Length: 209
Image 1 (spheres, rainbow, N blue to C red):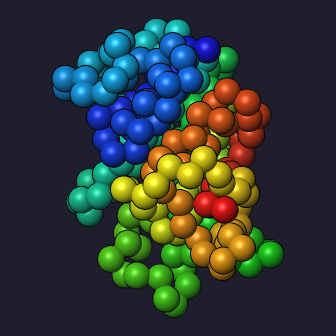
Image 2 (image 1 turned 90 degrees about the vertical axis):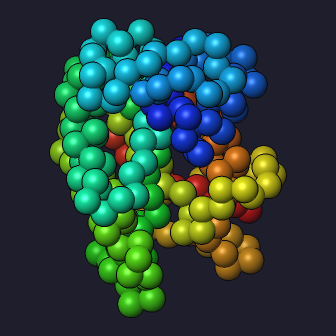
């Protein structure tokens, strides 16, 4: 299996790349500057310069792009639109590293986490932007996309336990009543989905056991 990881130099992208390489997959880091991952192959291009020819060599493209500056949050939608356009009507899967804020908190799938009273104001702009990107993906029936939301507490330096719960549109708690996952375990879930999963045109979520 050939996998390309966009924004592979980022915190989550680097661990996703490492997980894929350690499983002996054919991995290419797609980065703007020097490749700082363990992948031996790289494409050095800005995300908006990527073409259909660049990406259709891969079975799966993992989009680990992230932007946190408030004046740049529109890039979540802009990058998704670009990647969707160049992968339109191709066999290459697009797996997107999403956010938790757009997960639903009720059975009717009406109220999203970022619209609940206790959701931190500081994270609402980012979560809203990621939610809009997901809304854009939902309109695409010409792209083999999967949007993967982490748990509410996404721990950059958390341990790699190897265990996680695969869930769907709803915010899911583990047996301890927690919604958290490490970047390392999230990377495992991403590569599991890439190699074994078939949640095409679906949003899934993952939480530690």
